[in-house]
Amino acid sequence: MQKKIYVAGMFDDDTAKKVDTAVRGVAGVTNVAANASKAQILVDFVDGTAGIEESIDKAIKSAGVDVLN
Figure 1: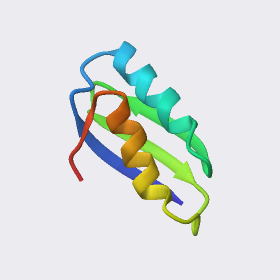
Figure 2 (figure 1 turned 90 degrees about the horizontal axis):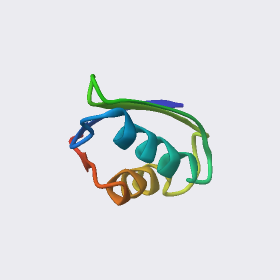
Figure 3 (figure 1 turned 90 degrees about the vertical axis):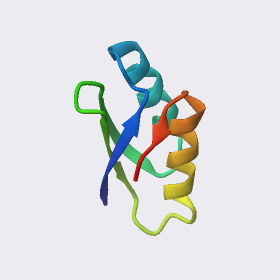
Figure 4 (figure 1 turned 180 degrees about the vertical axis):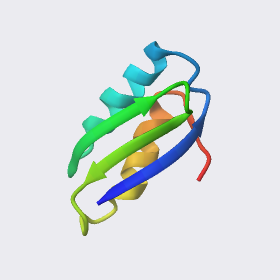
């Protein structure tokens, strides 16, 4: 399953890399593409993994970025 997440606070490529690394560490995530210029993150993950969407949001926030949706 793929989810597009809009964020605030991801202003440059360094922050995008931090977010990318944090989200890749979530169990069940198969691919991540963080784009600072679009203020969005595309995340592919195994559908049905318990609590994965909440874990992804927490990983994004741990990198200092706010989830908008």
